[in-house]
Image (cartoon, rainbow, N blue to C red):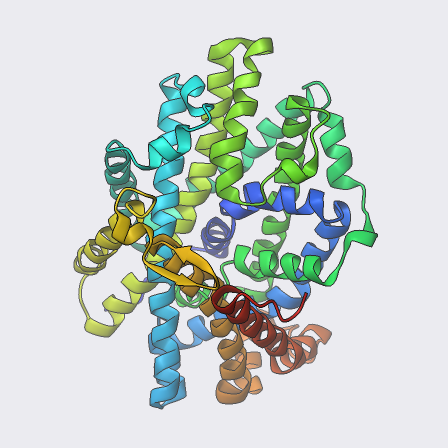
Length: 470
């Protein structure tokens, strides 16, 4: 079958940005920054994005465009042995399993959006509302809607599905984010939040904080998930990969900065005396347990209807971010099945979608509703649910391993000169440039070393309860 392509570089940038801008960027990042040096954390995050993550992005995009293959096909074609084919399988299975728990989180967001629109903000702000919601029967109604939307986008293919959705949803997301930031700035005590976010405190930049900033940068850009290899296979040969990569990285940093100017001022307008230790760095904790209380508190100034409208606006923003990320995650195994077996997009969607829905339902039932799934295993001294197991193995652990192996593959198997030649297509100034030298050097030396250290420490911390670094 003829390879699908994005219609333009802009289409790719918006699609890749949709993958990169997720709930972690919008919610968890601002609190991490405020607790760990404010603007100092933001500066380090931006540094890691451009000096650590950008070379990995360029490697993934180039590998995909060169082979015109999904991750499994790319590793198999160039690797020419069973070991590299196994790495390719890891790069396909990982996004599939990440899609399992990410679908559940997206359903939660859509459920809160629906309840906000229906004027049930008072219920959402209740102390036990979240635990009740995630174990309710109505959750599966929302799941059906989210699955339907996701499959409708993916069914449209690259141009008419993924790119078309990104061209609509991403500009709307940016406009909504800016509009909410402007509104929050009008609230009392909002500048206290701006102060906590933008005033740098370099004394808080410990090794643990730097590790957190690097992990946030690496994961927020969807690296090592096979997404950029897959999307890269849809890029036209005359498109400038370097320019596209810089655009995606810049948009990710911009959204992270804007989200800090949204979340922290909102928190301090709610309670100017709040201690930052009270805030959860977990996206789930902030979105579903803390922020509804802030929205409800707005009713004193703008009434219950106004507060519900602002809450709906916010949850729509987060839902757009989650949906575009979910689409990109699922596209990887779908593309792999289409390429590997020669099946139609519809057949691949139904085959993989059926398996993912079953696993997602099991994940949704693992929060106390079904004991077997809720207390599946115990490791690292903690009882873990099925949801926890999938998250710990595929998101926390295998992603840095995939990144490490990708760097070795590109530099030492595919070779530097092939990487340079691919990036140079559409960018005549890359050959011989300082960026070329830096990309080659970093991918072959300290970037894989950093990822290897993160992988080993993650395994030790999560599965054995021993942090080797901090």
